[in-house]
Image 1 (cartoon, one colour):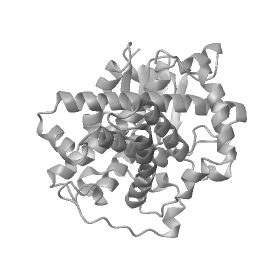
Image 2 (tube, rainbow, N blue to C red; image 1 turned 135 degrees about the horizontal axis):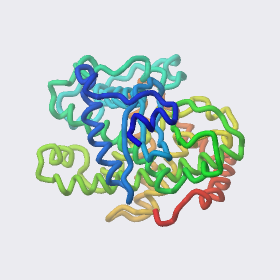
Image 3 (cartoon, helix red, strand yellow; image 1 turned 90 degrees about the vertical axis):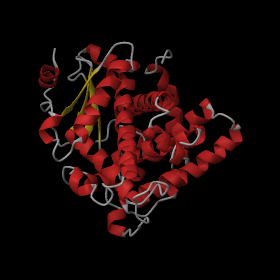
Image 4 (cartoon, rainbow, N blue to C red; image 1 turned 180 degrees about the vertical axis):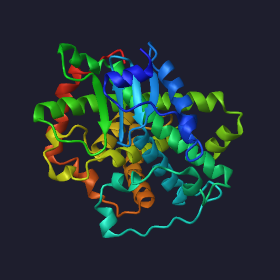
Length: 352
């Protein structure tokens, strides 16, 4: 079954042809090649990849055809988020930027981030204009975008690796796992199962993303791009992990339900962004960092929360909410953690 047939089988929008829109967003073509190779090589059995033309903010895996799909809407959002970070003046070591400017207001701070990022299709020529002549800023944009898209796709591959599609074998109405922005609420039972699968997929994606980062920086160490990234952003093991945590949190923050703090958290499809970040902190602590003690890693991670919050605030021009991390440590989230801990074995293959 080819990709077009697979999309039709699941009643999804047609495949996007990146060359058709290369004039306004050439990154579809560049990233389609990168993500196709990623899907072919990440697991023991190759998986296919495609963009489709949908404007919805989604990525998913089609189990019957072993196909990962990212919508044009999702990719446009990731492009715009990457551009906002670069345009904001953050990562001041990279030449060609501007002084960070922060002018938040209450109205923008309480609106879902996704509504701003998804308002129109991303136009590379217009939105990169402030820094397009800077080779260093272009490289920063590329690396942030590549990291975001790779995490999204590796997350979907995590569902495949842990055989999450097996639950459809009983004859469900769909054979698709979808990650989308602002998802609906589920029943308590379905919500816990869904959140357990998402945490497992997050862990798979983060571990593989770190492995790929290490391999590529070593393999391409002599190239100008790798040397620049190593010198200005990824100087050592600690800096590399901190960058990945920051980039992944930007994605979590984009996809979050903006009202999660006021709803029944057991009914969410995905844990809130601070909870997902806290889970990756625990994973980092478990895996360890070269030449750092457990206490030193813990201190680094506490600092990292503020880094993530600061960057998202500057990039999206809204007020930070430092209480959100405290919120996911309250008794109701402790109950959620315990419920997920009991649910994980149902969805986790230990070989992965």
